[in-house]
Image (cartoon, rainbow, N blue to C red):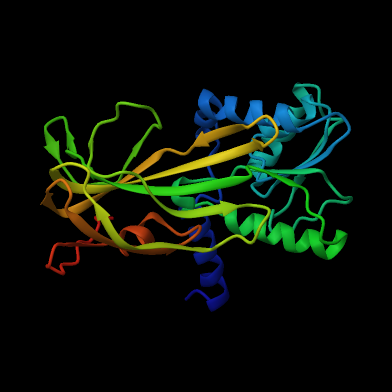
Length: 308
């Protein structure tokens, strides 16, 4: 029989895997191929990082963002707790000729404190709706640790902000003639499958150098912008990697869109109000959001549970 301690350790490992804390190397290949992501971070880093700056990357993965900062002339500490990725990053940084400027550190980002004050912190542990990955927790922990060592003056954070939105959607959930209600991820591009039944509703905003909320939710009515069959809710998260107020420029990067189906689609008419309720904590699983959602139409009070 397993001891209580071993069960707790196993549970922690399972949660880490489920919540995206140990992303397999082949997923990093897909991220490296994502030119929209790479261009957004490359342009933001080039706009912010200057020669001689000191930079920390939290959750460095393969080390590509640390490489981009070093290429701008920064001294970088790249922190990664997945031992496999630590070796990949060290080898890649060395093969690209930046081992003198980037130190890859095997550590938990929530515990790491740099050896000296830094100018910027890069952290791309981002998932739509701030689910699964621990962006909010990691940056909050880093700020606490950093202040305890170096005082209240914080470095600049990249990304600087995330804006969380959702909208009502008519979506077919039809795949090669087979209809099945499952969560769907969409690339953040125009002309996606689905009919938008409402405007985007903002339910959360995170400014990373300010106090970071851990609880998100919505409890209000949404007005249908056109008639249709409400079958899903689409969550859209826009991240502002860097904001240049003087030039009035920003460097945005959207996460993939997340579509959660409603078990029993309902007909809505243009101008009709639909009550939507949901709540979840940053970093939780998709199910934590899907299981919290309630949809109430007109005078009826029927709990519509989103399929997990």
